[in-house]
Length: 481
Image 1 (cartoon, rainbow, N blue to C red):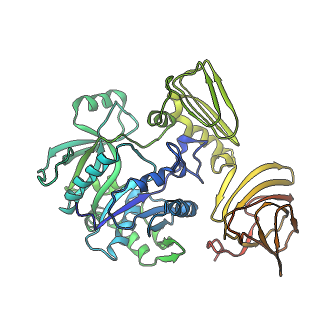
Image 2 (image 1 turned 60 degrees about the vertical axis):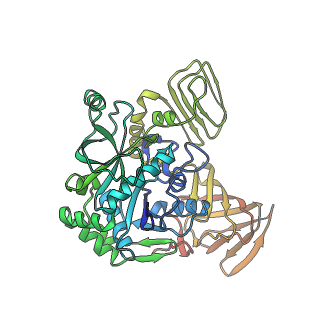
């Protein structure tokens, strides 16, 4: 396979609401280590074919530093991080990636993947990519159809049409079929009929095609989307590791999926079957299925004692969880929320998230531990007019130069060295030393050392919200322009 022109495009959007409280809007499932010790995004990067061009990651503003940090942890070579000004579904997102690829490479092939899928058999995945690459090089728009294992009602389906001509140079199990039609998520009876017929595959949402062919078909069927994306890419802004298309131009773009915009309309859509242990991990029951189970068919994560317990998924992040005489449960313990659910009902977890949003509760959006580009903080305790945080600042990192209108802060150094600026004064503090930042004082915190800086911050005042931050300088581009 000639992969010199293959550009992986990894879609990092999505909020993963059905995996709440592990997955939340500000730290969704693609950034979590759900099936092993690395995140799903890192797993996606690790399973790419060995030879390819620099991957392109597409994400939003809120997740940009998470993406950059997780890529950095893998020691990956140069990558591009495209920032969607606002989510407009997959058709515009991939248009941005295609236009970006065509700047330097007229023959670029795009392998479009989601950052939150599980694929257990990487070799079979590579074989399917090999076959799809040949078809895409001939001008076909390839989608990968998952060989179904049961009558699933949560996925869309693809009906296989006629088998296309085989390429005899490739000795693989995968064949290429014309797409007869795409169908929406079926009811149970219809899904069973699809399974029994052997003619249908699950729609995976993964694609491979020439960037130029995608642009041609998008111009044919949705010129309005292409026009908005082209205008947006003509005004890109390079910012640190990120490429920002123009926001106002992109906001004129309609919201549409690749399937609706192109794949259901083009005459060149083909599908390559994939039987490689795929899952989109869309619920706790799906996560239970792809995880290693014990003799009682339990998946136990963290500090868990399970007696007379079976067929359950139990995950503890914060404390000892003990179960006795239960079956088919999902129990999720996090520092600020606990979920207990019937495993057959977990598709409805998003209803809890909707309730939290309606009540404007922060648990729908953020964890107690919040990641920032400079490190992280854990909200240890909160009361009337005070808040206590445990703050970790990465080596060489610096918080923004800022001030607060409504709160004062006390900083106590637990370990490491802190370089502190208070108005015009700069000084160093080390373990067991502390300082006080009055309301209205311009201040900054930096870790000049080679080890993480750990400290306790005690806030006090009439208002303690994160929006009471006036930034004057910030190396991560968070100053309002």
